[in-house]
Length: 439
Ligand SMILES: Cc1cc2nc3c(=O)[nH]c(=O)nc-3n(C[C@H](O)[C@H](O)[C@H](O)COP(=O)(O)OP(=O)(O)OC[C@H]3O[C@@H](n4cnc5c(N)ncnc54)[C@H](O)[C@@H]3O)c2cc1C
Image (tube, rainbow, N blue to C red; front, side, top):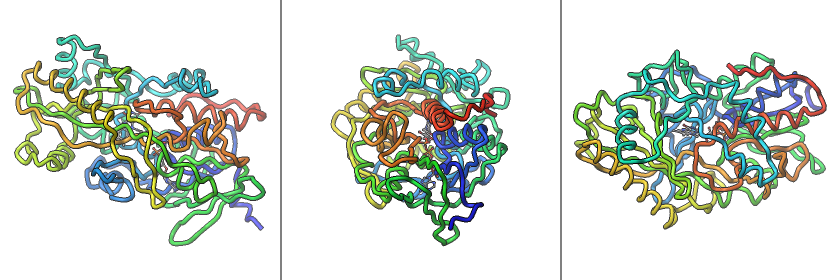
């Protein structure tokens, strides 16, 4: 017998951009929604100490490959969007259309609902301006990037984006979760879902760990949105074996240089960028909080440089990696960087060196490699149909794992649109209008 307070119209597992988007829209359509989130829901303090467990806990929020490349994912309400740089790259509408998924309407709707605009002149810090001007001077096709930022709350002399933004300026998936909760959704934090309950080929609920107990919750629709690494693990435990292989993680590297008189080192990261779509490279300014920069410098034994912050301009190179690898049964990432991936990183780093040298930088050096967008582990067309449904009835996936091809760009706008499209699909017969504007 299922207790009635444990039965829902939909259970959404994970509250990153994909999960929060679908949970919010279903709740606004009067569905009874339960969000199960592994991480905390503590208010953002904007401190390094609070960010450690959310982003740097080995085996949980920081997964390290055999080549010692760290892959960051935030385990907290809002998922990685809590720590993200709030850059809104145009979604790959045509690529998804080729897989039978048309999100063009939802992309346009999200654009109306969420702040998506380049930063004003007043919010462009000295680092981004130095990057922009030097790149333009050499002839790069450099642009200001769209940002998910409430610019009236943003501060130019701030370094706290990557710690979650305590000023409420950075729009993130928590804004959607708040909307969902206001519309009646329930969220349980510190709830780690282990598997989906399947009866006669249909998903009926999930089993999760909470307060050292194994509990169950039931719903007529289950949406797995535990991110590119979390979702395939849950699906495998539920009998969908072939997920979690042949994926991307968008590796990145920083190149640093010191430009005398540049400024205090603080600014919104990724304010401007250059995209080389054919080469699969994107390059942006990337001011880091000082403590993070110290950690990253120590990784490459740059002891003296670790204490330099003022006048330093970090440039980030992110590349489209070839598909490959495996998420291990224990949730670790086994995927070596391929030869082409390394060449792309090298080529990008050469562009960055040119821009820094042209800006008059000295002491130019390269940092260690990271990755921050694991995805493609539960692909549309391979594991999911074009409505994001798995082989089991009532079981859907909606997060970065569904992206069917290596793409190489930050995916949040795309995931928000996919979440909205899925909510429309799940309520197609209900004819309930959903209020548009997100908070
Ligand atoms: C430092 C950094 C900077 C970034 N900058 C940008 C940017 O500027 N622009 C952009 O578009 N993207 C950026 N990204 C990427 C973006 O944040 C992620 O791609 C996006 O958050 C992925 O969303 P998702 O829905 O796939 O899942 P996630 O955000 O990974 O969320 C998954 C959620 O599921 C929860 N979860 C996992 N396993 C379980 C389980 N078993 N049970 C219950 N809950 C579970 C997690 O705690 C998490 O809350 C950045 C990422 C990082 C780390």
